[in-house]
Amino acid sequence: MHPDLEEILFTEEQLMKAIGELGAQLSHDYKDKNPLFICVLKGAVMFMADLVKRVDVPMEMDFMAISSYGASSKSSGVVRILKDLDRSVEGRDLVIVEDIVDTGLTLAYLKENLLHRRAASVKVVTLFDKPEGRKVEIKPDYCCFEVPNAFIVGYGLDYAEHYRNLPFVGVLKRDVYVE
Ligand SMILES: O=P(O)(O)OC[C@H]1O[C@H](OP(=O)(O)OP(=O)(O)O)[C@H](O)[C@@H]1O
Ligand code: HPA
Ligand SMILES: [Mg+2]
Image (cartoon, rainbow, N blue to C red; front, side, top):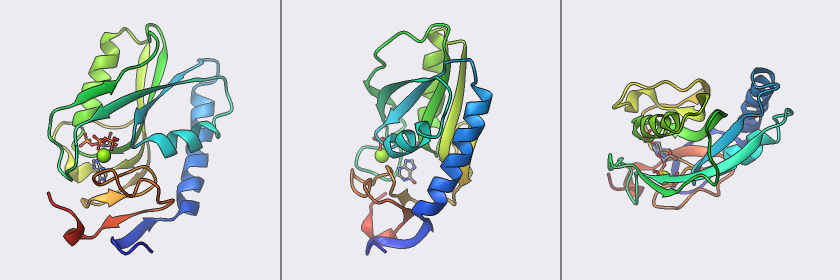
């Protein structure tokens, strides 16, 4: 285990099993829809890469970079688009791929923004949901795991840009970060 972690919540095997099941579900739900999967960088990069390999219907990918946390464990509340999509989403069935829904501020902003662009549908897939962190009411359409109200890192999730490369997910020790 990594010395900065208090405990491991999900092993690589547990993550892959859940992602496999989600991929099968999405393949069923999006058959004949040619959905556009939108990866929310940077946190969702690992999840997106593993998920799309388990989707066996025609689909496309695009990427958006959004940031609200900076070098902190608390959301600044100000959501900024750092990189936008490459193409129009008008009339498309969109699947937003997130690593975690915490306060819900990122997702609320993103959903609204994409619906404004006249997408046919916008659904949200998240690896983790932290319901106790919510500041705005929003529910993901698909979720692999609920997590407790602690700051978690690994498998794409960072604290001050570190720990994204861990293949598992754990709780960061309280003395490693500032709020
Ligand atoms: O529900 P919220 O409280 O808005 O938090 C969730 C968002 O925050 C994190 O992104 P962050 O802004 O840290 O950027 P990153 O993906 O580059 O780490 C995470 O990847 C989600 O996108
Ligand atoms: O628990 C978390 N860990 C990492 N990034 C995050 N962004 C929102 N919540 C978290
Ligand atoms: Mg982050």
